[in-house]
Length: 288
Ligand code: PDD
Image (tube, rainbow, N blue to C red; front, top):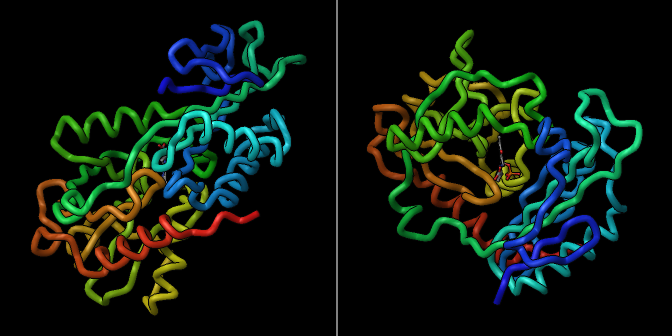
């Protein structure tokens, strides 16, 4: 079965799908994106992702390529044509193709691209093992709340983490030691008081859809949730740590830089939230 991509109104073979060399996404990273998980044949948290998509577009003054209902039809058609029941849908929209000039072009149709691929959340063995994170200086701009395709600092951070044998990078502000978030994940800790702590959804982080979902699952489970900044030092002495994202679910962190988190094994609250999220992901209803 060959993969199909959606590009500006057409379903085309993934291998030959293309946009213009003048596309402002390519030239300036002048675009936004979303990654939505597909589990048991349905989109996970589809509407919150689309709300964030609309918000990102509006914040960058990018015109929507099509109304939401039409988008949702294309999304479903992508799922059907690619026969993906467990995977991710990637969508990106840019300010379109125009003669290279920084200010907004007077006339350009927005580019809309979607791709789809099979991919699973980390399995039981990976979750049981957990992963390491490496702290890196926070060097990003002050609009991290926008899901823009300008990901250079994130890429460099994640590459550095990988070169140090870590799975994820934790952006850490040099001025006050606060961990904002990961290179493509949100950061959580459970300090010794047993509360669940994560950076508030300000413009310093991307407000993750998984983050929101996990906070709500945690509240339902009776946990005390604190949306407040925490430092790298606090994280290193925490009882548990984990990351969340569309592609990782709730992923235990067992090492921060050179220090094991607690006994170096995934924490019990983390594993419980992982199970709750997996159940939600598989069963989560598709709103009409
Ligand atoms: N990344 N923070 C950043 C910087 C991210 O890029 C992401 C998502 C998240 C988690 O958001 P969510 O729970 O909505 O996936 C937090 C996606 C998965 C990516 O770039 O592949």
